Length: 114
Length: 114
Image (cartoon, rainbow over all chains, first blue to last red; front, side, top):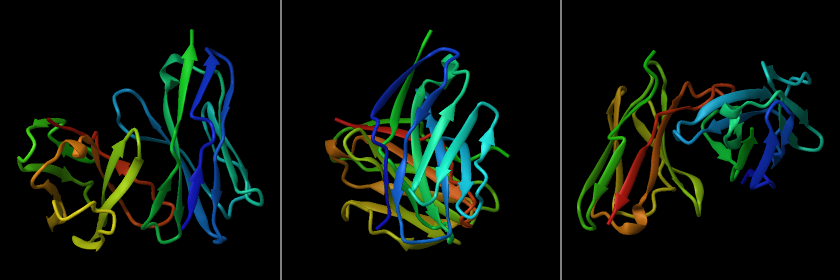
């Protein structure tokens, strides 16, 4: 079965600084999709960014960007100019082409220090 | 688009009682998923439906749990009888079912069984 590993249970960043959250995954597939979800204290799961494995270009969404290394099976999330509202749990997720199964990591709790 | 709607937002019940959680997926989404989130086990997939048909219920913990999707706009997750170890946040999510299509989550139901 596919596995998604987030090795950093907790991270902290100073407001306005940059932080990178790590995610690795295991798969034998060549086509798949990767996602980062944010879960603030309100507990709503919010899609932050997604990446198609067949695209070499790293996805970006405003202050959020990814570093996708397909050969290394690595998918890290970079948050630039961190804001207090970025404080949340962040989950990395993997999905195959059928889109029927999503595999989630255990999450990284991000604290933003004012 | 109202997003995925779950009710109730909070549920407190006594051990042995029946609990019913409700979900309305996003219109047009063919896939509906029920997840359970706990500190110990993270996000666990309980069951998912495609076009109202249960496809994979291997994540359902035991016979006390059952899920139905009588039509494309409504699903229920029932626990009977409930036990304290069922206390968790239960999420419903829907998607279009293609690999690039992300999961759209509801706000979750926090269940507390005393």
